Image (cartoon, rainbow, N blue to C red; front, top):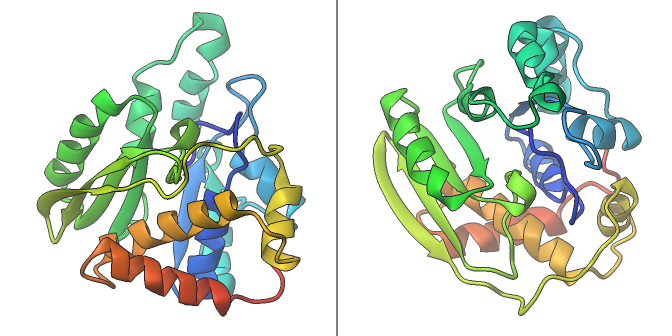
Length: 240
């Protein structure tokens, strides 16, 4: 799920999604846009990268078959929930729907990744994933509330694997966050031009590792991160 939008850092998690897709894993994302001002949303970034969001479930299915990736806006499959989210400017605050939509798994995927903005919510999401019968899931405090590791901070990950709960911590690899322009151009620069960006690369690798570990591809985070680096080194020359 991608509902928060980015404000302080680029949406590196999109590169994680595309890296996994190019490596043979099917990735489905859902989200919404525009409910909070001064934020950059996934749908906008994908369009700038030349990747069209799906317009329907049929479109989504076709995209998953042809490129292993699809993003479907909430308004396309549950407009009633989108209408409630759109009330935020009127109400002046988030509603419980913002939490609910992060738990949606409309394709019943074996693995889902969730992020929270407030760490206190992580236990709720963790237990909810188990109660909902989610086979594999991970929840952590992501940058700006999106599913994105922060290499400049310790990250506590709470996981459901084979419907059993566990948790682990990812130690920071950078001393502090660097200010980087928020936009799609830095994503393209890192992926296609191999432009040096230690913070961006560490973010992509760590987030990819969480996904691989949650799926059970690797038994621990460190070996999952090593595989993530191999996937990155073998990525296609272009994003799309």
